[in-house]
Amino acid sequence: MTQSNIREEWDLIIKARSSLFDFNFKDVWNYRDLLFMFVKRDFVSFYKQTILGPLWFFIQPIFTTIVFTFIFGNLAGLSTDGLPQPLFYLAGITAWNYFSDCLIKTSTVFKDNANIFGKVYFPRLIMPLSIVMSNLVRFGVQLVLLILVMLYFHFQGAAFEVTIAILFFPVLIILMALLGLGTGLIITALTTKYRDLAFLVTFGVQLLMYATTVIYPLSEARQKFPDLVWIIELNPMTGIIEAFRYAFLGEGVFTVWSIGYSALVTIAVMVAGIFIFNKTEKNFVDTI
Image (cartoon, rainbow, N blue to C red; front, side, top):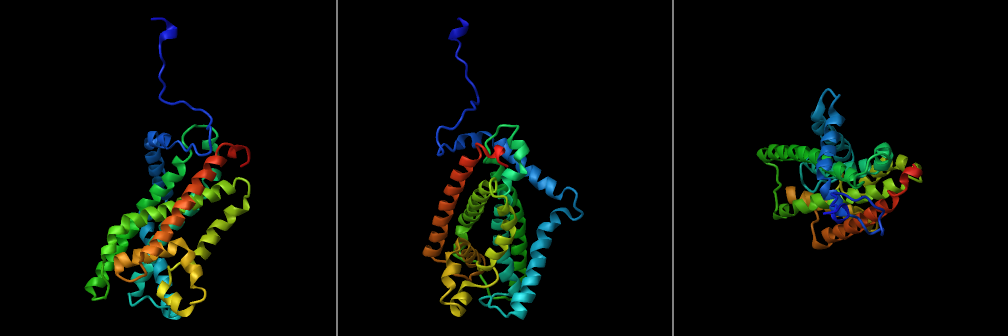
């Protein structure tokens, strides 16, 4: 057999994309080992030189719940739909933290990893996906805290119940992850040309929280601000958080329309995010 007759087979062929819609998800799957390595790196590096380590997973939501209970529950007197105030706020904080962490950390992917992206080939989508997965570990720990607080108030005789909607819990996690990921991908692509956006992300997420039912129930907003409540309902995270509370605590607005709207917006944002990310990654090194 001559040299010319030998057919060479390659594990990987790097070539330019022929279309903006060529997302090449197969490469992402082939690099799944790298994905898990980045997840481990993010988890270890963030707490490696801290005194309390992973205990910060518990400390942050506990102190935030205490502050919300004092300010919004006691001073402002906002309703919590008859639920114990700490339980109401902790449920909203747990869901919101996962979404906001995914959004904020994903929004700086290009800026934070420009050196790696410019030297080594791997599917760029691996990096934001690793952020979503590493934040899922933190979300799981905080979910355990929520369950412990639920058990405490249960034995104290508080009136709440876990509903059949708990079966939708995996769907809610996916929606929170994809919404944070999609929004973050859009922002990180835009920050390659407009650096000012990076300074507005954290501030904007904090403001967005007040347009979501984290510190008040949707029923309270409908009662006190019937003419403006549509702004809150347009926020896709409102339907997700309300469904999250209804699933775990039995209080909240959980309808097919609300969760369907959140799902449609999430899918649209995610598709737009991947499209813009895919377009930007080809030449972002020259502009960042």
